[in-house]
Length: 407
Image (cartoon, rainbow, N blue to C red):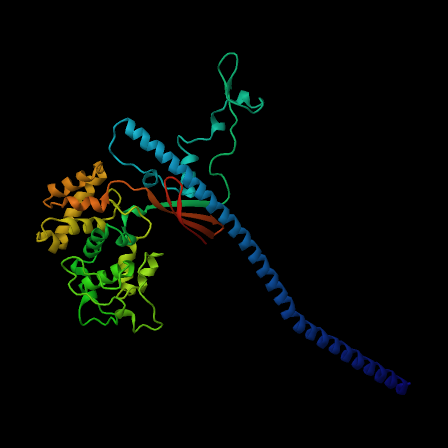
């Protein structure tokens, strides 16, 4: 009996060992499958998420592009409204020049705050409750004349996403392409005045590290030579006393290129002119254009351009204000304060304002300055879920487009 019990026990032990081995083998297979499938599933999940994000980003980009296009159409409406405002001002003999975009921010995120509160309530808020069952239509009065009904439509600016529009006058800058016309001397004067302040002396020192060393006069000379049709260096005026071949400065360039002898196609082309490096370009770029009417609008020009006009056309170049930075700031402050209060209806108003402050300007300033502008750089930006799309245009008030770019 004892012997039989031992045999049964031995058989059970063998069976348990076999079952344990089977279970261990199954566990190994499961672990191997998990190790193999985990990176595959993770990669598939990552690809699916990436494709979904790309699709949503593309969707938001398309919506942002549509919003940017809407912003361009909104700018057209603003131009038309501006004409109406100017017409009203003229009827009331008001000399103050007002541009709507300088007063109201053209940003839907901000404008919603005005249209949803205060006096800018939605029309449905003032429609009588007794009229809600009437069919939509034009405004009508009932027999007693007590209630009014009107079709309300959607509230303004209630749409997903935002857009904003920026207006900047191009007629506040120096038109480089005027160097090819009769206004060349006036443009030269303005370019000289722009880099005249002592602050820029470090750019024109002889011991400068610049590989293309030029002094102030040579820099202006090279800019003129890039545009004019001749092969000789520009020598018109008292300061330009040395002639020579205008191409000689470019002969050692690699790759070599020739002086264009034609108008600038872009402002960035200024970088190709001998002596214009990154620093010089950053100084000139905010103040030059190739699209304006050629005259600087003194009602919108920034303080640096106003200073340039004063330096270029002052009758007395020896005035202390031209050698004292604080005195120049004080002078500009007074002129800009008067401009903000009254505006300059005529160019003579600006000239007289400068004269009142002790700086007499030459009458020839009329060659380069005016009190109005008609060409604007418009930046329309559409925003949806953090994705942006923009359109940049240069247009005049009649809708003519001189430049267009989108991104």
